[in-house]
Each structure stands twice: as C-alpha cells, then as structure tokens.
Image (cartoon, rainbow, N blue to C red; front, side, top):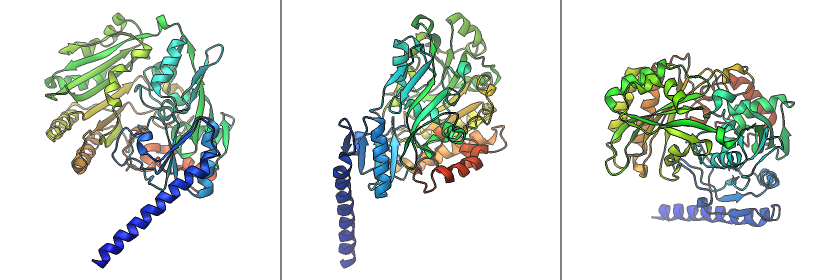
Amino acid sequence: MRSSRLLSLLASIGIATISTAVCSISSDLKGRLSAGATISHDVSTAPRWSEFHAPQPGTIVTVATEGDVEATVQYCLEKNIPFLAQNGGHGWSGAFHLGQNGLLINLRGLNNTVFSTDKTQARIGGGAIIEEVITQAYDNDVQVLTGNCNCVGALGAGLGGGYGNLMGLYGFMVDNFLSFNVVLANGSLVTVTPEQEDLWWALRGAGPNFGIVTSAVMKSTPLPRAQNTAWTGGLFFTEDKLEQVVQGIEDLKLESHMNIFLYFLTTGAPDFTPTILVTVFYYGTEAEGRAAFKSILDIGPYNDTTSVLPQNEWNAGADGFCIKGERKPTYSSGFNHFVPSTWRQIWNAYTDFLKNPNTGSTTVVVECYSLDKARSFPSDSASFANRDIRFNGFVITWYPDASLDSTAEAFGSNVRDLIRENDGLSTNRTYVNFAFGDETNEVVYYNSTPRLQQLKKKYDPKNVLNQWFDL
C-alpha cells in the first residue's frame, strides 16, 4: 500500500512539475513573439491527421511571422526544450517522441502565397497547405507544381521530394525550389540558395533534419485558367479484374502528361464493400486522355467518373483522406515491378483485415507518375534519392480503437513485406514522406545517407532537430 501511495505521489509531483514548466513557457515566451502569435497548452489547437503515436506537446505556439519561429527556436535552445514544427500535421511516422515537456511550433499562420510580377516565381509560406497554394495560383492565372492531397502542408510535401500531378512536366518539387527561408538548428533565420551548396542539397530531401523552412520561393508558370485543365477521375473495377489491372499499369508507358493510381478501398457506409479503383490523370483533353489510357479502359470498368476539371478541382476526389483523428498507422515501400500475383495476396490480406470492426476506411494505394522529366535532373542534385523508383505503395490502416494497434501493425507490416518480395530493387527503399518510422536511414535516404550524416554533424551537432527520421 505504501509503495502504491509513493508511486502515486511521485507521479503527481511529476505532473505538477511539468504543468509549472508549461505555464512558465507561456509567461517567458510571450514577450518575444509578435502580437499575432498565440500560445496554447491544448493539443487540439494543432490536431494531427493520425492519433497513432502522435506528438503530445505540452505547449503549442501558433506563429504569425517568420521571426516568431526564430524567436521560439531560440527560446527552446536556451531552455533545453524539445521542439517540433508542423503545418498540416499529416506526417504519419510513428517515430515521433515529443512529450508534455516539448513544444510544437504550429506554422499554419504563415499561409500566404504570392507571385512575382511576371508570375514565374511563387513565394509559399511554411504554413500554406496545398489547397491554398493551388487556389491562389489558379485565381492569379498561374500554374504551380504541388502535391495531390489538398490538406497536406505544401512545403512539407516538397521537402521530402515532392510528387505531384504535373511532375511529368516540371520534375519533383525539389527540382523547382529557388530559395528557402529557414530557421537552422542554431536558431538563426537565414536564406538558403544554391550558392550554399551543402545546405541546399540537404534541405531538398531531408529538410526537417536541417531546419524549419518558414517560406520558399519556387518556379511557377503563367497560364490562363481556361488552359489549366486536365481529364481525370476514377475507374472502378470488380476484383476479378485485379490481375489485368495490375499488369495493365505495369505495361503502361506514362508520358509527361500522365499519372495513374491504384486503390483498394471500400464503398463506404453502410456496407463497406471492398472494390478496386484506378484514378487516371491526363493534362490535356478528354479525347487525348482516353487514347493515352485506352489499355486500362479496355479492361472494362464498371463505373467511369472521369471528366475534364480545372486545376483547383483536381485533388477533390482525395478529400476523404483529409479527415483528422483516429488511428492510421501506415506502411509503405517503393518498388519497380507490379506483379499481379503479389497484389492478389495483398488484396486477400486487405479483405481479411476489413473483417475487424470499424476498419472500413482502410485503404491500399499505389502511385505511379511519369518520371522522364524528373530523371533529366542529375540523380545527386538533391538529397532526395528516389528518382529511380517507379511505384510507391502504401497501406493506411484506419480505425478508432487503440486495442486494434497490434493487429493493424501486423497487417501493415505484412503488406509492406509482400510489396518488397518482388520489388525489383537491390535493397529496401521507401519514400521518406510515406515511411512508417521503423526504417533505417539507408531505406529512406538511400545513397544520400553518408553525406547527410556528415552535414548533420556540421549544421546540427547537438541533434536538436531529431523528430523526423533522425540522422
């Protein structure tokens, strides 16, 4: 009994100590911030997309200026407070370890996107999400390369590499950045351009290990809205056509105007019937798109929802993935060969997992883009090292009850293992933005790892930027 009381007393002292420290942060830091910045101790101020192993900061600072980020980092360094920056909160790695003694820098207030007079450059704030960037660009008759999920932080997606609908024309997002404003591990706010060769290389692929990017300038293209359209949408197939669909995607030559995704998902409430969805994208007319994807269309979808849409509507079909909350441990792997028998095994594992309660939003995804333009850039031009990967596959296990964690992790890990069995690669490879969190540096950074580790020692010798696939 005494032991139990002692443990309870020690726990209460610990909680009280943390609470006192948290309150002290508010009073100490407030005077260093701009009038528009706010400080909260409610984690719901900056919700995460997934509650699985999510950061649990005791303090959330929502910044209003780039200087606020600098001031907050400097304060954390002075007080030895762990910190993490987030924008959309969609990084799904399960390796976060920020606790109640830590501070989260919420970048959402830095959400402006502005264009140069000739519209060939866009300055994107570190708090802008993809939908905001696209809306600003489209409304100003500008085209900008972004990711494909509206609610994801635009720069977070880009710093990992940056796949997107238009990469067949422009390359990866890392190929389109022109400069960064970034708060480094020493607390200084600096501008990084190609002249700072090492940092420029490291930020484009492993950005969170080297600083907090508060804004970035990237290439943009002036384009009247009437010309900024694409034929895109969904083709639904019955599961008996799975092997044909997989082989069809494997054999398809993606030209610069094209991309194609495969989904295993359900029809939703109330039945949650598993089905196969292929989304097609063609930057051009419907006639051109149907001709380009004829081999897929000839398989015979039972439903065709494709249409010609303006750029500000291209991503709308994926908005269902933007719902925050619940648990979503996600496993992923890159691969170069789409093997029908492997994907039949994954389908069977998927439908078995759906027998668990409240798992109907679970989804398996494969993304495939045209890579010719991306591969025209030197393979070592950025620390992003996956230009040679044809496909990225991942499974989002989605459920509300933490008691299902072990079952979901076993399922997700099994799907990843199945993908890797016939991946056509010499070693395991995973896109860092899609990784689960248990991967080694070599899996997510590949042959960039040695140079990144050396630069980490130079630019972050105390390893204060350690939350995201730490080097």
